[in-house]
Length: 192
Image (cartoon, rainbow, N blue to C red; front, side, top):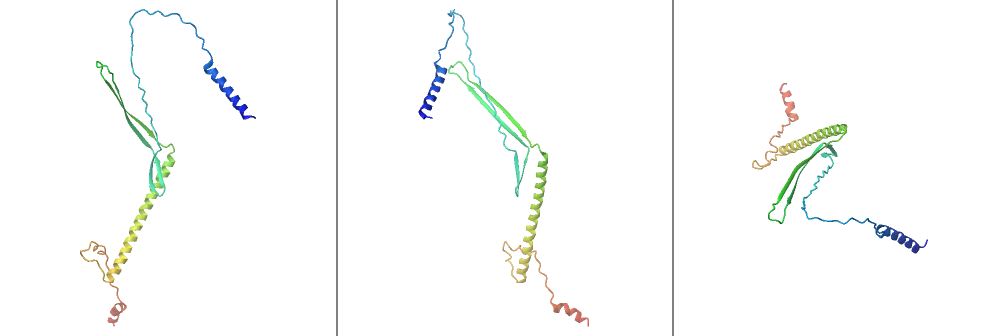
């Protein structure tokens, strides 16, 4: 197809739409003449204030316990709000009006599947027990290394100065004297 022909067809269709929207004359009936008679008139004034509260519920509260363990639990979202308006006039005989609208919006969110919550809590308990065991093992390893190193230092006659802040590190390590083979055999030889 010829592109100029398409453009003219589109232009023709737009022209028809435009004529349909604004080109049609409006036909109205004639109105009877209005006669105004002097009389009292009243006027009113007012204001309308539309205020809305938007509550944005985010994801559930998530507690993370390390090692990839995290559990989501129920949450309570409390959103306080205060709206205020001041209305005034340039007329000195009128007063300003103040309007203050405080309030609180609250939502409670909780997961519907309690089984998942229980499984997650059990996984957390297992993870905490494992962390406690690893901490105890690390403490035991530290104390055993301290015992061996302090024992070797005491056997070699090396120690911290009494005024040193580290003097107490090896204070509770006791090195027992080994009995030599002569000392072990000497009591039996004395019986003869």
